Image (cartoon, rainbow, N blue to C red):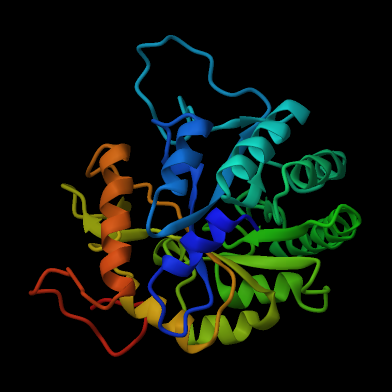
Length: 315
């Protein structure tokens, strides 16, 4: 760790807190990789970068609007040059490289081998994977078995490269909840296979009280994605979910962060705000201000917000 990074980490608000905050570049489509690292390097809150990685980053017309999964300038190319760029930028700025996040399908062990090598080359601690979706019509038990075999083998491959598999809790997969994720990874070495607890995704599917969820995940709790969501009525009267700012949705983020403190969580909390209430540049600055206030317990939550006594759940 560089002296610069150590100084920045020490400058973060402390309250027995062991975890650090980073940003996942899916939510910074307006910034180049160099600009993301520069913003993190000068942030009083952020300390690391989690990279979105694709085989063919966007190369369309210059007037195409930026978007999270489309024209995202902060996306790295899945090749040695992309990994080297990540390592060079982060190393020069004293910024941590949290994870390498490609879009691999269950069963793609060749892809795991390739990306484990690239993640190690980028000095990333983790390689993100998603479990299989269960909407294909296949028996869910078979989908779960296939996902478990894939994750177990991926963990062995990644371990050879010094990288940890991070399985993301995600709606419409066989690990949408903490309990389902534990069923997927139970018995696998936690040092090889961890779980990304995406609290925002659980609003859509899989919510469990964080006190239960973190206990169920146990040593497999390796990483946290921080975003928020809410349910709303459509004009036809049906319910639909949407991504909303961190301080507006059904997740009581300050209470959730306090809970992470209380259990001694020591991993990364990575911003993945997919809301469109503000332009991405404003969203990132707003979230830095929010986190700075929350981490020093100077809450700027609206005064009429009502909270339950359940950490991570707003009523």
